[in-house]
Length: 403
Image (cartoon, rainbow, N blue to C red; front, side, top):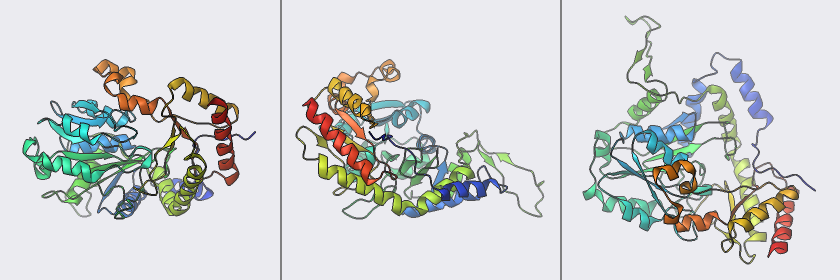
């Protein structure tokens, strides 16, 4: 029997050596490596700028705060996602508006988005679940068609002139849209990425934020404000021969503590150097799984990496006609054979915190129907062909025994 973990990080000697080299320098917190990583992320996303922070959640929240969304405003979020997509709305005082996903899909329902828009709607948060890119063209058609209903409450909202698309792309860094080659990071007005330990590209913890140009707001200025926001609003512009003492700094506004460190950034820089190798391996795993599992009766697979575009982050299988007990039994049996699996995700209305706000899973039938049969298989860039074959063998064995 083999032992297959769910998603261990792919850390080579190169990343370890990069961390050691950084620790020998004067910069182990935010410094030149963090800025280098920010620039590299902008390059791979085809954007002019990016800012790295200590999590995708921090990036997501800072985007909403930069937009000056707050009390009395509404933010539309899919019910089928991880808590971070929605919790930041609560943190800034806005109202979370959950909508269902489309039937037999993990993506937000675009029809439900249209229905949920009110004059108080300030942002929509599409989620590239599993790494599959959302239909951003459809989303922008929706918000463009509702310009006349939009009520801006800040200069930056007025400059955008419509509801902002604030993409949760925690899963989709390096995903390329098949029809035009655009990269994840180019689509949303703001886009947040995660470098958590289980992500394709990791810094252990961390994230990055990209954005589209905004008329009247210089992107250099936006980057400066985001960097100030992520580190207490502290500005220190020391200039030789200036009248100010060398130690002088100013707190320009009451900011937050979300900065990335150079130790973490040094991991990310090497990961990006290895990105082709890492992503190629993930594509190979998905191809193998698709070849062997996609034609099994009663098994639903939607990863679209060959059609729409995906980072191949999560390989999500769904026993769409089965219930939770079947799914849980399947996972237990796989574990007995040494194969770790997971579930992505338990819909937000099923969690205590969201129930307390007033959400009920009965109002989100598509989200529940996708959740009850969902199983995520191991897929990580250090998987061997032998391990891939073993997962497939175990899947077919357990499934055939349970049918």
